[in-house]
Structures are given as C-alpha cells and as structure tokens.
Image (cartoon, rainbow, N blue to C red; front, side):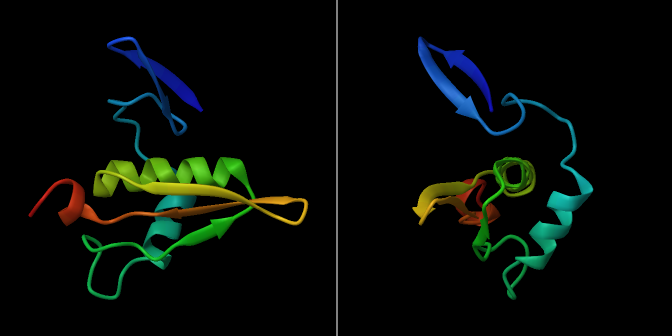
Length: 96
C-alpha cells in the first residue's frame, strides 16, 4: 500500500499513489465487470470477498480509477483475514 502525506496527514492509498494514471490490471477490470450492478457500471458494485491482499488492493484501485471510490473492510474468519471490497458507484462519487 502506498502512502502520501497531504497537509500533515498520512493517507494510505491502495496499490498506487493518488493521481496515478496507470490503468488497472486486466484481472481487476474483469472482476469489476463480474461484480457490476445489473443496472449498469455507474451504480453500486456488488461486494467482492477475497483473502488475498494484493487482489483486494488491485480491485480497490480499479474501482477508484473507474468509479471514483471504494469501500474496503478487513475482518477475520477464524485464522483467515478476509477483505470485502465494494463501491457506491460513479454517481455517488462523481455525480452524473
């Protein structure tokens, strides 16, 4: 996870530093399409659950890149760590 300091506050950013124009990975774009809202890509995404931190970070960056934001929650399921990643959608973050 990358970090950037803005006005004295340390901001944690998934995978890349804010303002990056690097396109998301092909895998994360396929995940975004697979978890797309049936009403269209600009609406809230269905949640993705994964135990893989890299997948969670890549997917979160993809949602930021295309939809303007994401929500990620980390929780324990027994000894495993699970990440839930979703997005409120383009209309929520960017407008429309």
